[in-house]
Image (tube, rainbow, N blue to C red; front, top):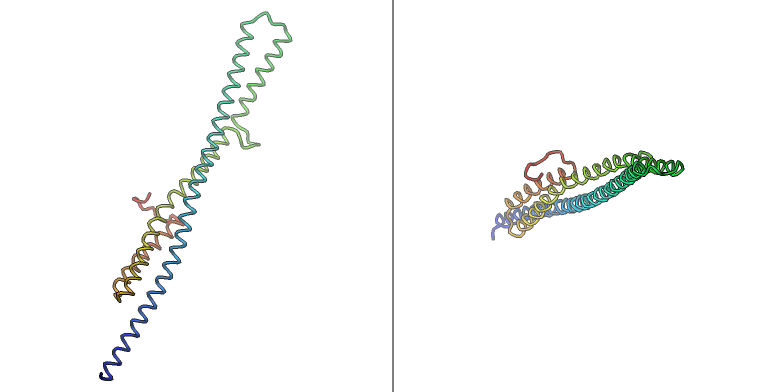
Length: 199
């Protein structure tokens, strides 16, 4: 073997080592991004589920308030109709029945809006809408994390294969796919751009 051939082989080994080192660093960076993406996706899923449950609970509370309000109004109507039908009631009974009907009407009116407790029907609807908005935001984030996760995993596999097969072009392809995955991950957190097929 000539000295020139030996020097050329050493140069090739050095280039292969640099390629493998860079590819390994690329894999490490992509693995870190994959972990961050997985965390964002899991949090978006939990947030969507939790806010959906909170909205459903508040809507149930709203329905219960609505049913009670209707019952109080019906009770007041029943008392007033009975009062009109039975003219033989003494004055004390009339006053008591009228007071009871008014109390039912006040309670029914109070159920419409209770700003001090934030549990009136109007306030409950506002709260439920806020939870729905948070749920919808998390549901918009989730697909970006899903696609980013898939692309980052594919990129890691391609770069790993490029090390074994010593195919730099495969590493560049994996890097390009990884960049797209990283952009989707960032968009999952920020929702700066809405991609139509992911909405």
